[in-house]
Image 1: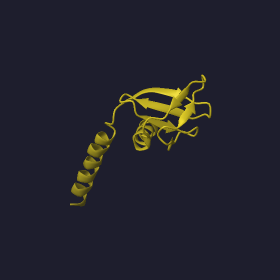
Image 2: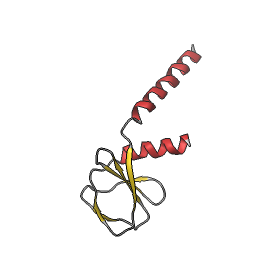
Image 3: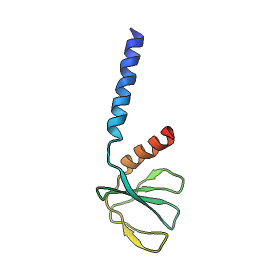
Image 4: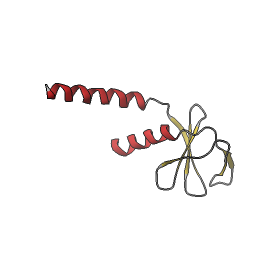
Length: 93
């Protein structure tokens, strides 16, 4: 009985994780002057990765300086979306 319950829970976790990662792919990444990375998704929303590789908060509308000197304004704040992608990359290789 316990093995069946464990198997059902494990298969449910795989189904949920596949659903959670189906959030849209990253279109491009832009290096910023402060060492962080701005990720722009295909739908135009953005997410910030700090210099330590963690998803971090940035207020929508806040300007940022790209490594090449361009000013970019934050559109959205997809912290959870980026965190899931970073976790999948870290665990999955």
